[in-house]
Amino acid sequence: MRVVIADCELDYTGRGDTRGERATRAIIIKADGSVSIHSDKSNKPMNYMGDKNVMTESTKYIGDKEVLLWQFDLRRENLTITMHQVFSDSKFALSANDSGLERDGTENHLQEWLADNPHELGGNYELIQREYQTGAGPVDLLVRDSMTGEVVAVEVKRVAMIPAVDQVKRYVEALNETEEHGVVKGLIVALDIRPKTIELAEKRGIPYHVVRTDWKDLRKSHIEQRTLVA
Amino acid sequence: MRVVIADCELDYTGRGDTRGERATRAIIIKADGSVSIHSDKSNKPMNYMGDKNVMTESTKYIGDKEVLLWQFDLRRENLTITMHQVFSDSKFALSANDSGLERDGTENHLQEWLADNPHELGGNYELIQREYQTGAGPVDLLVRDSMTGEVVAVEVKRVAMIPAVDQVKRYVEALNETEEHGVVKGLIVALDIRPKTIELAEKRGIPYHVVRTDWKDLRKSHIEQRTLVA
DNA sequence: ACCTGTGTTACGCGG
DNA sequence: CCGCGTAGCACAGGT
Image (cartoon, rainbow over all chains, first blue to last red; front, side):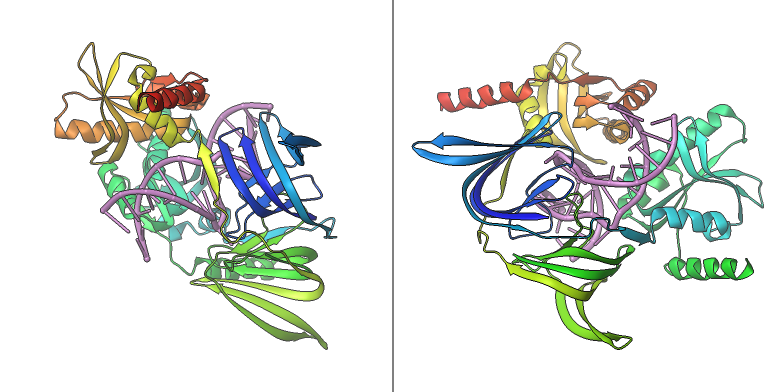
């Protein structure tokens, strides 16, 4: 990892356009070629460019002063750094193959756990299939109500927001077009559902269920038990 | 900005949970207190914590070896870095008040320009109001068709994706509930509209219009002309 | 390569 | 302060 501290101007054109006036910033270039420019605030870089960019170094005269130009080009994007003054340029050796992060508590885990424990969906359900394909894309869980026999399309979210309601509607609509499962209903299952989303869900007649907060612990013991059996 | 290079383990719990096994990484602490941990790949930090966290330094024994613990705490989040070995610790002076980025070509600019040039919406329209409040949130542009007198709710997007279709539907639905503007129609106006989105828009009977690609230039001369007049 | 959906999304704006 | 919508969103996964 290379860290260059410089008084610089920033010009980006591509997906949008941005400009940064002269200031002293940190330019970080990583082993894979990705660049990011940081001010002394927030984690997010001011500008950046992905790992397959082509870097070009050149010089330009501003009046009678020669300045360094660093350009980074990708398909339809260009980032130009006008280097007025370089204060330092350091290289640091980091692990070449960092194994990365192991994640836990993702939406995928939640989905998995609910597939194994369909009674946690807030009713008496049994799993038909996970990631069931519909004409409008895959629905997270397709389940059957053990009492009524009714088929339900379940959309699982960590945080359910407005678009989730219409998403379920599209799945239900697509499933009802085939008539393969009788009259299919929708259901939103989430760790958190926002007020406006509840409002719309009620308007659209889509019920929802909030998952118990200790699901991560339950999932953990669920996995441990399974391992014990095996 | 402080850059610490260390062989470390990472443990985060909060919105999700992540773990990073031992590796040499860069720990960046900024003036505002925000922290981010970087591997030598990609712009995005592996772990991070916002600017209002509380940092605690302590030590712990692993077997008979004493290691440093860096903890960063925020409301419901905790990031713990187990520092096995510190290779370097550098401080860099960056501008204290970087003026930040000036953005151009944002959705807001596009909306503004379309409000000033409603004929660019792909028909003979005149502006009624920008950010018109409906019961389902503010619609980007409310316009009238000069020929038919029909009122149209316009959703402006840089890139229109599936949720945009339902978004327009909700606005149209809300506007038609009031009966204040007669029978209101919807319209999607975007720089780019995805195939699946077109498919759904057609299914839902929502027309769409793709904005000319040179709108940024047109906007620029539009602003210049305006300045000239003033 | 494009499209779709998730993310500890972050960030800014309005209430 | 929370809720909502945008972002040069990035990134992984499927087709």
